[in-house]
Image (cartoon, rainbow over all chains, first blue to last red; front, side, top):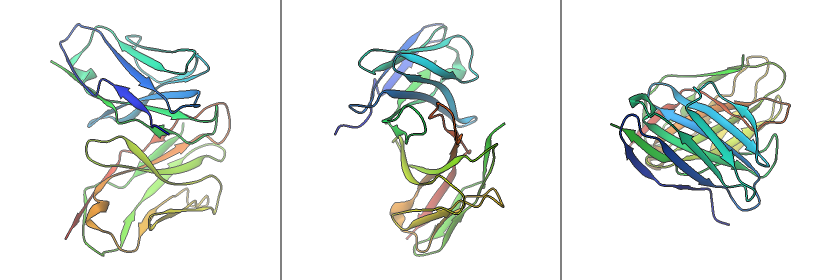
Length: 113
Length: 114
């Protein structure tokens, strides 16, 4: 079974632009979560989706948004990029709606210049 | 709120040395506890888990025991290899509720020298 895939793997944007990252969960997984990883803040939770509904949201500004489609694929969007948004964005999927194990993708490395 | 505290790194060991990475947590109720490993340029891989007090998670020679009395979940391995060099994250998940959300510690870099 294929793992979690994230596209693109690397991305360079300039301040003020917006970006969309994509995540395809493991087949059959309906729960998708996003995390931001930076050297200074470590791993921080962004959002959690289940069956196209956002269940939880982390403490990030409104510039960060996401959605989940009926095939469980998920996208996250960051508008008006800032230098501090440079990070590795990780997506994880779970076979269970709650209390399940999370399987992580390789991440998208976003660099904002 | 819920949080995880991990020992600072980097931890540098010689091959075949004994490894301990300390992890303590603060949580209400009965969280599930995890250790994840991240190799350079990759995402996180689940190493082991424990879902209730006194459970021992184990995988690939690594072990950790869920100690509720000391709110700890320390990672141990009896004999490390160069291939174990990676960043190790301790994490917790709330023990109830409709969520898979993980709360992570800051990570500990392990460097094993031949």
